[in-house]
Length: 229
Image (cartoon, rainbow, N blue to C red; front, top):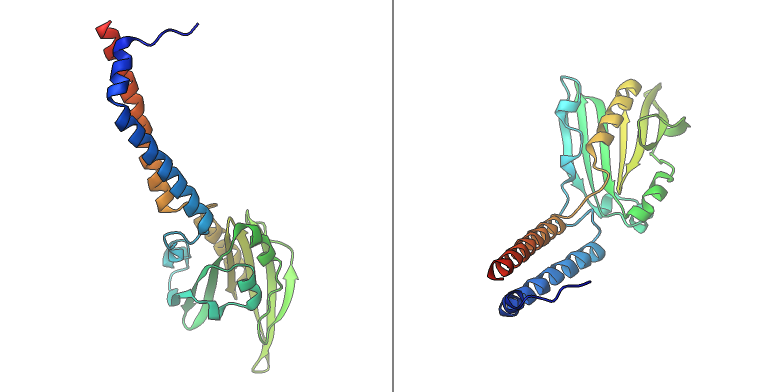
């Protein structure tokens, strides 16, 4: 059976109803803004995700490797098929050792609903013949290829691995098959399974602080009412 509200408690609630109403309104506005932010902007590009932070770096590579290319990619670098699937942003980094390619990594962000379609694209490289190999066991959905071409009368061979994780697509190229498999696993581990906008994190933190303050206030009101009784 419910208990009647004590007069002292009722009085305090009436006296503080404006702060309570305003606080609740602010909390509701923040929730709405967070929802609009997540709906209006793909989570992968909110607040400008820094893809260089999840790319391979020199500490992941063999000694002697150095960076020759490290830059964001623009829509003009991307195929029409990828743009149609909602390509959002990209990044490329290339490592050499004694002028020889160690590894090239391309990272791209797509809407989550289209990411598996990207993995289904055939790899097309000018002058290279592409042969698909059994999928590598690197812990992520991936495909692997052998790349061959005739260069100065000799056969040049390289390998490629492409994989997806969350809303991220990554492709790696190297002449060293064993190294490529190891780096692909490392690259996948560096990519988080999902991305949350800093704005959403800030909004949730503010809401949590408000709810904590509201709970503290409720405890205070209850204790104060009992003392008055």
